[in-house]
Each structure stands twice: as structure tokens, then as C-alpha cells.
Image (cartoon, rainbow, N blue to C red; front, top):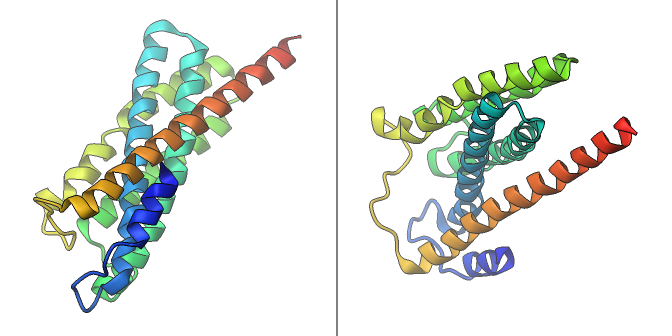
Length: 199
């Protein structure tokens, strides 16, 4: 699925914009990375709520592993977005509202991982991390709606052609499945490690 999306994106005609030309193809990586990270952090928040309700460590592991996947993808979104910005707007960083909001989100979730590493007691780590991640999630809708709330260089797309929409949709789906696969594999590794340590 991911391979098909890449193939389709690379074989689309160049952008009619004399500035963007073939560089617009980075959107097929940038947007799926951003959406994939938002999906991952949404699962992190939901799993954190479930942990606080049920006190089941499995939810803590789910939250942790989706947060790791989301952090990788939001980092990729920031880097690819900077490359896009340099081509489209002439600078790698422009303090655009969405750029800034996503950067804030990056720091918030970097702090989440630092917080987890700093707490040794499993109960305290799971509880405090869960509470933190619920509050941290505020940055996700803020990042998404920032370009609509404030003046933004990010384009407001109202419609998209099937020629671009199909590979873009497949790429987004592929990145979400990649997030799920990464989190699932690492969840199983964490559970296996727990079994070994408890023997």
C-alpha cells in the first residue's frame, strides 16, 4: 500500500506553480507524517484515560508505545515541513502559526518521554505520565486548527483532485498502519520483557 502511494505520487505531473514544480511531492510524506502523529497521540491520550480508570499496566504500555511512534512522526513532519517551507516561502522556518504549534507539540511530547524516564516507580510513572499525556493532548487540536484561527502561510485546501487525493489518502492510511504496527510490536516486546524480569 505504501509502495503504491509512493509510486503514484512520483508519477503525478509536476505542480503548475513555477516555484514548487516537483518539490510539491514532499506533501505525500509531510501530511501523512503529521496526521499519523496526531493519530498516535490520540491513542496515547485514550490509553492514558483507560489506565487511570482501570489501573491496568497494559494501557500504560499502549500509551507509551504510541507516544514513541507519534514522536518519530511529528519529528518527520517538522523536518519535511521545513524543507517544504524553504521551497515555497524561501526560509526553513517562518514562525507560521501551524509551524509554531507543531513545534510546541514536539516539545510537549519530548517532555512526556523525559518524564517517563525520570520516574523509577512503575505506579508513579504510569499515573503521572497518564495525567500529563491527557493535558498534553490539548496541543493536538490547537496544532490542527491554528492555521484557521490565526493568519497562516499554510494553504486552506477546500477541495482536492482525485489524482492527488487517492495516493495521498493511501499514504495517510499507510502511515497510520505503520504507527499501529510499530506500537504493537514494541508492546509485545515490553510484555515479553516483563515476563522475563518476573521469572
